[in-house]
Length: 468
Image 1 (spheres, helix red, strand yellow):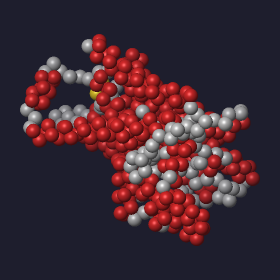
Image 2: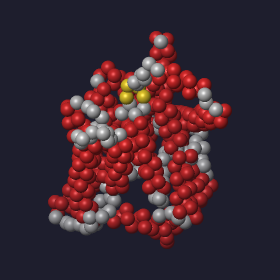
Image 3: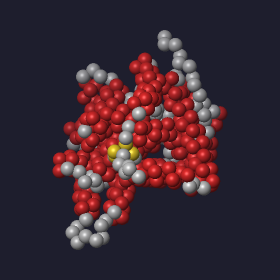
Image 4: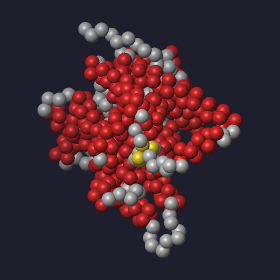
């Protein structure tokens, strides 16, 4: 048993030794494309308020949601203290990524939280998030908030002590308040999580008791907190939209969606690419991390919470369908699927924070052995196919992760965006095409040809250029 634990620990430490050194020795990719658009929103809004000019639509405030305004204030404050915006945002994102560890420590205790925290940190390192998305993007913050929200929602359905229930209630309210501020459609995440936990509560309800079922009581308490936070968030968002645009609705996004929404056939193509694209689809980007999380939990005496897994996977699935209706499902300027980073990061967080101690009875191993021996040939074949598919997924995702850490990041980024002839042609068409077609350019054959070329692009290692 001791040897098994040592072997497991070595398996965990090996990826750490592989992926931590590049983070410390190589310059991370500083994504400043979106940051250059919303980075000065706070200064522009404060100037508008100081001059009492409403609405502020002519003052250059970006279309981004309210949370970006808070980040803009933070970036402006840190810039005044001499810290570059990208590095300031990197520091903030790193602090956000540490929050799930604090939740695990609070819920499970310090001793039990050590393996769960290690698994969570390992899962994050097994993705392209650290080398590409910690600096310059807000998707990391959104993913952590989603993860904490659905995790607290799931944990509140368990029979916890009063202190745990109180803190989780506060966390649920805060995260439900913050969640729609990062993206208006995140409100759907709240309803999906609430619906799944509600179904689980009603299915587990005790019908032979005359007293109110505690599961239903806990779910109703969660619903009240969540809906209260959501209403407050919508009020904040509506106010911000009105101040900067003269309407409570996000008119810029609505207008863009109306002019760029893809046809149904393209939506299906975008949805397939979201999961199966070798150029950073969900399987390539997150497959290794999810496999490691599910595989390592039992090695440390934990098991995946069925409730947590159902909520997390339902949220990620709905998220992917919604994003496939957007004109750029991977994000226009991105390494991999940038828009799925929040949902998939939340999935990793939820799987680790809601994991439970294994509670197998003394007869369970025997029953499992009998079940394995009685499997039919068809089930054994299905299991073999599943195991082979898992190996392929892990190898593809491992390749994507290694390339993300060790390649020349700017060259890798540009090769994924404009490395093929169709995307090069779209780049030449972009100026005159968008000038004449407006947003309709993003429904043109030129753009769709480039999008398909990006979907099938296979990233390869690109040697780092020597520093001047």
